[in-house]
Each structure stands twice: as C-alpha cells, then as structure tokens.
Amino acid sequence: MHVFKVWSPLASKVELRISGLLYPMEKVEHGWWQLRVPNAQPGMDYQFVVDGGDALPDPRSRWQPQGVHGPSRLPDATFAWQDQHWNPPPLGSGIIYELHVGTFTVEGTFQAVIDRLDSLVDLGITHVELMPVAEFPGGWGWGYDGVDVYAPSHNYGSPADLKALVNACHMRGLAVLLDVVYNHFGPDGNYLSKFGPYTTERYETPWGNAVNLDGPYSETVRSFFVDNAVMWLRDYHFDGLRLDAVHALIDSSACHFLEQLADRVRTLEAKLGRHLVLIAESDLNDPRIVRPSQIGGYGIDAQWADDFHHCLHAVLTDERSGYYGDFGGLARLAKALQQAYVYDGCFSEHRKRRHGRTPIGIPGYRFVVCTQNHDQVGNRACGDRLGHLVGQRKAKLAAALLFSAPYVPMIFQGEEWNASTRFQYFTQHEDAELGRAVSEGRRNEFAAFGWSPENVPDPQDPGTFERSKLNWDERSQVEHGEMLAWYRSLIRLRQATPDLCDGDLSEVSVKFNEEESWLLLQRGSTWVACNFGQNPCFVPAPENAAVVLASAEGSRTGADGVKVPAESVLILSTSSELQDTQSESSDALYRVHTAT
Image 1 (tube, helix red, strand yellow):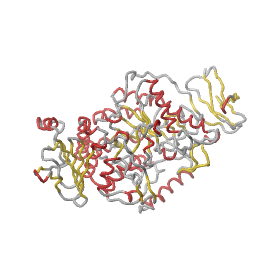
Image 2 (cartoon, rainbow, N blue to C red):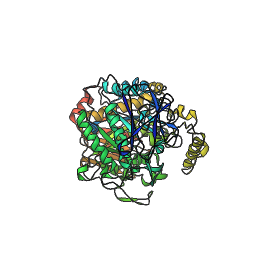
Image 3 (cartoon, one colour):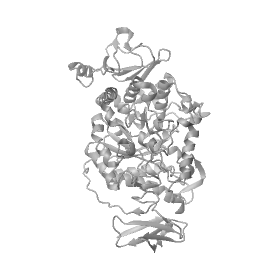
Image 4 (spheres, rainbow, N blue to C red):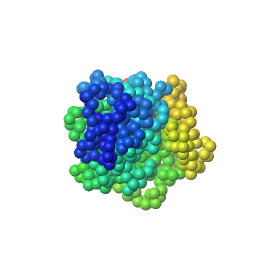
C-alpha cells in the first residue's frame, strides 16, 4: 500500500499515471490530492497529470532515475544503517571539507567518494560537505540549478548509494553536511509552476521570480522546504545542512522562514538524539542570522563569513576588481580576524551604501571561513585556484591564517595538495537555446572584469567538466606532497592546541605594519607571524616563543623579534608543553616544516 499525494491548489483535476494508465485522484483539504494504490511497490514509476496536461514528475519525487524530465520512481526505503551510536563532533572544533561529487573522483559517483574517505580522515577532516546533490538537468553540473530537491541526482547513484556514503563517513568518524538550495529553482526541468504557486512575481532575485515564502499559498511552499530539510537529516542521516544564499529568501512574515526551519530542526534533533547543524550562506553581514530566536535572531548555528576570504585574497593577489575593491590592506585583514565582519555598518564603495552590522557578542565558532571554495574558485573566468594565482609560498601563508583564525575553517577539494586542476563552471543543459544563453552569458559576465571572452571556458563543453576532475596521483609529486604535509601539520596543530579552537573573539590580538607587510596574530600562547612582502622582515614576537611550524626557514634574533622570510609564515608558541613536544624528536608532530 502506498498513498500518492501531490499539492495542486488551483487544479480542477489531477490524475496519477502508472504503466500508461490514468487514475483520478481525490481532492482533500488545503489543495492536496491523494490516491491509495494497494499494489504499489518500490521500483514503480509514476507521474502526475494536472488538468489534462503533460505527465509530470512528482514535485516531492525521491528518485528520478531518468533525469528531471522522466517519471518518478518509488525508492526502497530500507537500508542497513550501522551508525546507531553515531553523534557528530562539535562544529566549533571542526575542519570542513567541501567537495563536488562529480569531480572529486574520475568516476564521479557516491560510491567512488567512499574510496577516498580514508584520505580525508588522515588529513584530519571532521566534516565533509557535499555540494548540492539534488536532481539537476543534464549529465553534469554544479547542482545549484536543481529542480527535484527531494531526489539525489541519478548521475551520482541511487538513493541507497547516497545513504551508503553517509554511513561510510560515520563509520570513519566523519560528519556529513549537505548543501541545499531553497532560494530558487533551475530553469530546465522545472515543472513546479504546473502544480501551484511555488514562486511569486512580487519579488525578483538574480535567478528570476522569488520563491513564494510570504504570499498566498506560501504556507505549503514553506513546508515543502522544511520537510525537505527534515528528510535529508532524518532519512539520509546527514548531520547538517548548508543553506545556499539565504539573502535571496525574501520573507516579510512575522516568523521568518529561516527561524521556522531552525525550530523544526531543533525539534528533530531532540527526537533523533543527535546533534544537527544549519549553516547559512549570506552576504548581508547580518548577525540576526546566527542569533537565537529568543532575542530576535533566526537561530541558525553558523554562517559563511566571506569578508575573511576577500581580505586575505586581496592582500595576496592585489586584485581590486568587483567586490575586491572594498578590501585590501592589512588593516582590513586584521579586522576580519577579530570580528568576522569587516563591513559592520561602515560605507561600502562597491555597494555605494553602508553595509552590515557589528556582530557584538557572537563567538567565532558561529562563522565558517575559507581561503578557497567552489564560488571563489569556480566563478573566476578559468577556475583558477589560489595557488595558480599567487604560488605555493603565499598559498601556504594563507592556509596558516585559515587554521589559526578564530573561526571554523573550511577547505575546498584538492586545496590541501595545491591541485593543478582548475574547478570551472560546467553545465549540460539539454535545451539547446538555454545552453547557448548560459555560454554567452558567461562570456559577457567576465568581459566586464577585463577577461577576453575567447579565454572563458564554455560551460556546455564536456571538456570543461572533465578538466575539473581532481588528479589524485599528483599528490605523490614533490611540490604537491609538500603542500599536503603542510596542511596535515596545520590541522594537527589546530586540533591539539585549545587556544586555536577558542571562539572568544575578545581574546584575539592582531598587530601589523602596512609598510613592512607583516602581520602578527596572537591566540593565547600561539603566535602567527606572517610576512606578505617580497623581502625578509622582523616581526615583534615574544622572545620566549619557539617556532613550532614554519613554511620556510626562519631564525630568531632576540629583541628584534623573529625573522620571517619573504612570503612566508612562522607559527610560534610560548607553551612549554608544545615546545617540549617539538624538541623531543625531530619527527615530532610540531617539527618545523620547511619548504624545499
């Protein structure tokens, strides 16, 4: 027995299509239609027909084995989970690893990711974050143009394969986060408007009409997404969700959608008996997102804080185009290290207005930061990674600041060995006109940044996708292996040093000299001496601090501080325990790691 249900409040007739036959459905309350089918079994394909139109997939389809235009299929809900006693580690002491299933391995499947999990464990990762896996058009894509948000992409495997991946992560002590997109739907294969008012013309977003969160019939639309979040967390055992671009969730309701979602997840957390987290992407610099609902916030656990990336990137590359015009200089980087938001109500030249609000009282573990992610790499014209732009010496310096900052660090696939492969923007829209428009739009977008249109990879070209796949073999090469060892050392240092996981921003001290291009970050007994310049310099670190990690050879000179080579970083400690560990053996975990 299976009860087929679909919401279509404005329809006068809805039918269920199975094996080429149509069966009328019964209209029940609040615009829902339903039909009980006694002999329905897992593996059965079905579609809905609204008012005699085309046969369409279920908006809440759990499986689309033939893609976004094909019929929906009933999945087998049974799975032999082995994580009954699993509880994820705290996000505040976590290390997040963002990956794209389709390019993380040559095979590009859920099963293939499992084969690489031990490498992430060895690196010291605690949380794996999957870029969106909901069904999207074509054979490859980033996943942000998904349309069947309840169905894992058939390109990556079956629903059971995704459960196997989550289960395998938990068996290795890895928490799993899923990137979900609730702010818009993709244009190809989006049949939701045939069923009901999922979007509204009242508001516009960069992707067109906004999702209907506060207009007529919005209650069921809100539930559509809240129920989706619950499904991923409950049925697939995900440990948390990353919410894409929440600034595009336009909602004037007394209870904002994010607050409703957070409340529902807290209730689910209590029922399941395991910790769950929500992380929001937002460019608003609005602390309400992570404040508790009891004091007027939305109750989200953490948010991406892009100002850290922008400041560090601008210092390392000297880029000032686009939003980077608002950043640059060590003063702004120092501010980002001390309070996450650089723009906290001050004037933004790029936006031509004041932007943001001071995040008073919010601890550092409420913010996720990075030096690279899918956006900051993939939304460059050629998908350049930081190492491609500034070289390995500066990339090491960036990594040291990332793992010593008072926030939750996140790295992007391949970053840990300074992968040579780019991560480019790729699509496979089956609609030829849409594909042409995407390719042309991509070229025009980057023309404004000074890049020649002919040098911008065509998103629709299969080669753009293939070039973005990681080459795991290069980790054995000297230069890539050196970077991998650097990341391992930084992560182990962070995980073994309580001061570096302390989210109390009032305890963060930063000194800098713009003219000499050095910055000194203090986190308790740990000091991070950075030289961004092209010449060696002296940084005024305490005399009793010993070097425990270095990206290049450095030497102490007493009262003058520590001598830091050009484009390098030294991490020092006044902790006798850490110093003893370093001096006991040349193979100790905290040995000075020097560049060749």
